[in-house]
Amino acid sequence: MSEAEAVLAMWRREFIVYLRERERIISSIVSPIMWIVLFGTGLGANVEVQGYNYQQFMFPGIVAMTVLFTSTFYGIYIIWDRKLDFLKAVLVAPVSRGAVFFGKLLGGCTESMLQGLVVLLLGLAIGISFTPYSFVLAFLLLIPLSLLMGSLGLIIGSNLKTQEAFGLVINFVMWPMFFLSGALFPTGNLPAWLATLTYLNPLTYGVDALRGAILGPAVQQFPLYVDLGAMLLFMLLSFWIGIVSFGHMQQAK
Image 1 (spheres, rainbow, N blue to C red):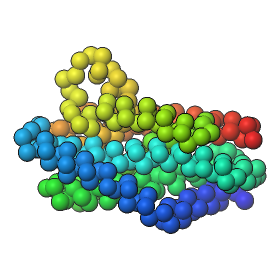
Image 2 (cartoon, helix red, strand yellow):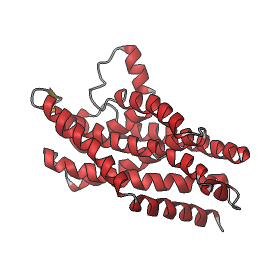
Image 3 (cartoon, helix red, strand yellow):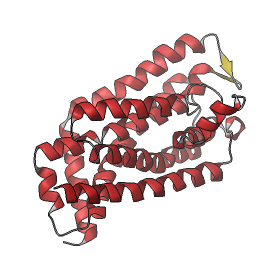
Image 4 (cartoon, rainbow, N blue to C red):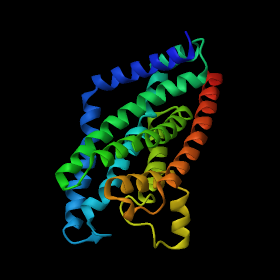
């Protein structure tokens, strides 16, 4: 089996599992709806940010949150596969650990992009004025964001052995990333120490790029090429760490 065939086989398996677990699809959509409708409407009625009501301003951040939650929690399936001995069978196959990593990653990326697409469509219900260009651009921006966050989830999952440990670690990683990304507030006038943490957060650049694509460049803190460059840099680093982590996981077997 070639490396490309191995990646495709892994992706196909992950996608079939995703389609069979409808509760995953439903639960992943309920959370962003609650944020948009309850939190966004509550503050949106009284707060305006950069010319938009708060619900509209936070919408790109909720799209990014959907990708973040779906992609990072995807890493728990590494632990489940290990308990089911499916991972053991995969790791002894005559393919590189990089192929296994990217096959799993593409499966998680597909899942998070589909759910991100559903949330983008919800934007029409709250008055987001998409053009064909802005909608397509926003959807395409989900690709690097999904790959980056999915890599993070797989890195964490490949280095842990229990679901309890994964849940504890992922919460310490996921929530700070979300709150320090500018998803819920503008990042232009933050104190120096908080701005530094924000700029070191890879999700910040995904939120900023989505906000520029959905609401317009006027509300974007960085040019699009800066956001894309930062996400690419973090993504390549996460790929390298992920492949190394899968290699160590093989040795542990």
